[in-house]
Amino acid sequence: MRTSECGDAASKRPPSRSSASRSLLDALATDEPWEAAVAAFRARMPRRHDRIAEYEELLGAGAHRRVGTAVLERRYRPAPPTEAWLNKADGRKKRLFLYAPIDELLFRVVNRLVQPAAVDAASPWCTSFLPGGGARAAFRRVLTDPGACGKAALRLDVSDYFNSIDVHDLLAGLPAPFTTGPLRTLLAASLLDPRVRRGAQLIGGGRKGVMAGTPLAPMLATLYLRDLDREIASSGATYARYSDDFLALAAPREIAELESFVRDRLAHRGLLVNEDKSRSVEPGEPWDFLGFRYERGSVALAPVTVRKFETRTRRLARRLLRWREQTRASSAHTTRAFVGRVNRRVYGVTADRTEFSWATWFLPVLGRADGLEHLDARVQRECRYAATGTRRARGHDVVPYATLRDAGYLPLVAAYWSAREGPEAYDALVTRRTGVRVAEG
Image (cartoon, rainbow, N blue to C red):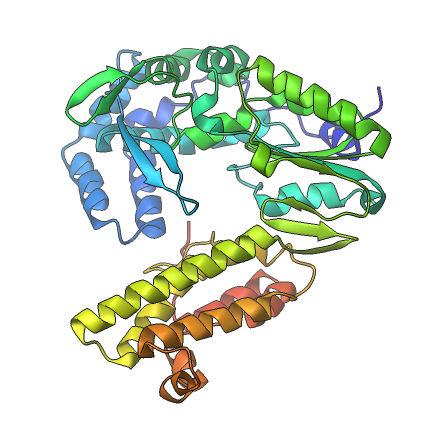
């Protein structure tokens, strides 16, 4: 059976370093990994003052050492998580699970400790949520195929992937470092416990998979389906998976058979295809993957990405307009508030700027700046609407471009061209315009 270009790359991977006999969690009874996890959370989520305070209180009381020791002795059982629901932009609700602070912090620490082993064990075709992975790696893997323009494309998306994973199947198929010792005991104790807390009641939660919203869910979802990744790539297709999102390029005569094969494999594992996000296209037709659109050798933002950006910007403007009217805030104050919110969402600008953001996901992959001018114009228009209550020309007089710039506004087009120069140029521009440096560590 032929192997794809990705398959050739897989054969060159170095031997796994994860087969060492010592437990991946040996450091769990020491202070360092817990303190590092809290520091990372504080840098990434500086506005979560309540949760940061809870974490620090747990460390101050020494609870982390007691829990770490109990895990290593294989006698710790996390309390059942609380069921929660997140309202999505399209009106649907997403089921999430939230652990108590001590267990949430425990799983954050465990996630950090097992990351090197997870990187070694992960399929080379799926490195979502792992160091060195991300959308850029997944998309560029597909674009290494010089014949991409002449191939048909298959894109499949799994509905409610995290919560639909068969836990018994997952545990049986995990790589060796995850199948023995305290880590295996902890995974089984948390994933096989059927209970969830709904309000004041403790109930059976039904099928909840790896539990979306919990710290280990992304890593476990990445490790799952590794065998399917291998089968798809060995068919000769150019292939990449990002968690629940599959993309394969193949000759038109092969794409129908490949689609049938993948659907059968997913159905066998109890996973349902999201038909609204799945389709196959003929050579030369555009296809979307991870928020991008590929068309005849060029990469741009997918239409759904543009719509989501516009919708969120419009909603932000409406909220801030109501806030301005209720508080009688000045137009200048409202402008600064709007730009600050946009900078947080687009560039990851918080008290300590994070490395991951909308811009760092999309800008490095785009082949051109087309479409970014439209989004820049939308941001400016909605900002002026929030500050003045009108979208007419008068808004430009009240909030000229110089006012937007003084508030820290950074156009996407300018950020795109600095990203093309390299990470240092991009970081320098964002720091100069927003005044916040990227967080270290």
